[in-house]
Image (cartoon, rainbow, N blue to C red):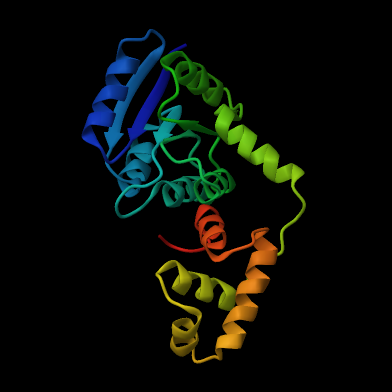
Amino acid sequence: MTITLLIADDHPIVRDGLRGIFTGERGFEVLGEAAHGAEAVTLAEALKPDVVLMDLRMPGTDGVAAITELARLGNPARVLVLTTYDTDSDVLPAIEAGATGYLLKDSPREELFRAVRAAARGEAVLSPAVASRIMGQMRAPAQEPLSQREIEVLNLVARGSTNKEAAKKLFISEATVKTHLLHAYAKLGVKDRAAAVAVAFERGLIGS
């Protein structure tokens, strides 16, 4: 049985490469290509592919929004995320939105073929790195979320603000800033400002 595909990626070279890979392999047919999430949704509705290879970070409508919309529309296509990013802020939203699988772009060709075939059957597919990350989260104790104020303080720290400068910008005392930082350290499991910023960024709590 031939598995039909839709490729969604904002880089033409990546789309060309994926089309070439699957066109040269028996059992696959590429029906179309999309340069952003909105186009992926439109083409998936029109072409009804078995599997959508979905990048995450695209201009306009991103991959997670596209996956969410396809689920809302009841589109039967299985979505296999194919991206270079494996951070918590990328992996979990995509899976929660309804992605059948999550694969990294540096995966070997044969692994990609196996993943697409498995996704077409409705089987969950995770790259080893992503699977390890998720298992680690499941085994870790539940983490208390940071408050909005703690996130605001960390954002300012990440941009180079001192405690005094952060206090002035947030209209609070310097002592209060220190208290928020100490609470953030405890929740993130770190001991200093640099580590707190790094972990908060890794978890998608603050911007770069």
